Image (cartoon, rainbow, N blue to C red; front, side):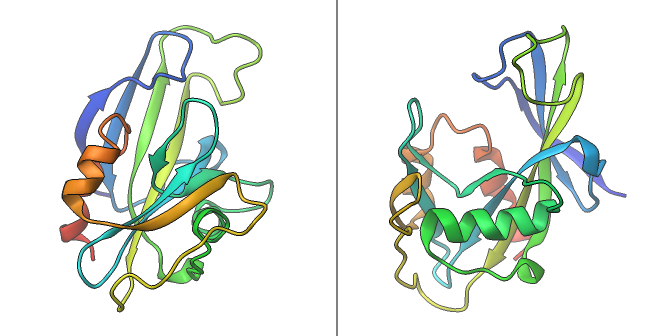
Length: 174
């Protein structure tokens, strides 16, 4: 099991003191502590698939979200990519890139929906053989436009996204 912490910080949505670690890993953390999954999908030109999340406080981001009951993280990432961008990705082509580990230093309010004291959000990746195939979220999606964005544009549009350090590790995997 290889694990390398590539960045540390905090997440603005966590209401108590905590540590967020971005970990490059080749193995999964405990499934019962995994709450979300995301997909860093790149095309043949090295552009990344982003979606605009139409929720308060959100903007351009990689597709992803919470795991559903009975769904493993890789299945969740594939489902979220399709739901938020209209781009179908079979779960079996997604490779584990790593995860975000959230360690809370104090018990959160009762309304906090994640495990205490540790939870994980997994990051998956894949590369399509084509140069940015057309994408469009389904009409019932919580997301607006989606598109293929250059790494420089990703750094600009997603400058505050907690997953951004994973962008530099993509070349190691795909």
